[in-house]
Image 1 (cartoon, rainbow, N blue to C red):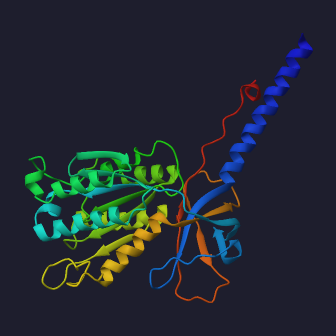
Image 2: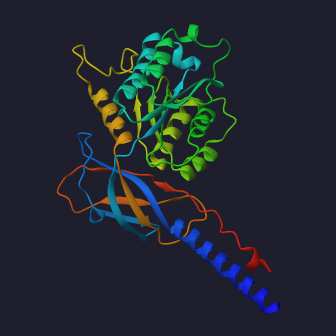
Length: 326
């Protein structure tokens, strides 16, 4: 009987060790979304693992493989409907146009959702294949304040982004949130660092369209944080400023041709729906989020930008098996 107990204990120890090794392997080996973009906003394809060099704290990150990933995407649009966003009709209509254009650019198999917020979430439309429903919701918001609940409309961008990330109940490569805002933040209960940790762990990319309506002040920092958060998660942030007469730059000319700002948006949209999946192996396990560097090499093309998650999530500590504790 004693010998049998010893055998059983050894089995638990071996299983526990195997589980620890599996957790260690999953921590060291990661899958990350990557896009290489030229100076015209076009995605460069055909690159292999030999075209990249990675490092973390001066130690090499091994690039194992690079493959094109065209699987269906899931995107939640987060639309800021705070007082500063809806106070001017022309600017508000442009913010709505950014959302309309993104929905129109989505491949047919993509899933899309919508979160509209100010001090709290006003609308939360789950992920679905229906484009018409989302376009109708956006059209209904053209009236601005008249179409939204009454009351003080502050900006809780971190809370709204947390509502959006909850839509992704399980990971799917390329998951993305698209935030449309003017950079304000003055009402969230959630802290930005906590949100960043969650997005990194769930591997959700943040893309941002930021139409600044003011310079300076405490709210302005929220916009800068959003751009940094986009870089950290592997998304792209676009910031625009008003011109000399106080207008946001147009997205299309009178003839319907995209302006430089419109072309920039289309390049951003393309990166949401097309990406390369890169398998990497880290030099060591991470106990907290860490930055790393990824560069492209071995190509004659110039002025290339590598878009990738600049930070990688830390790993949870491997749990000890019951037998190992005895």
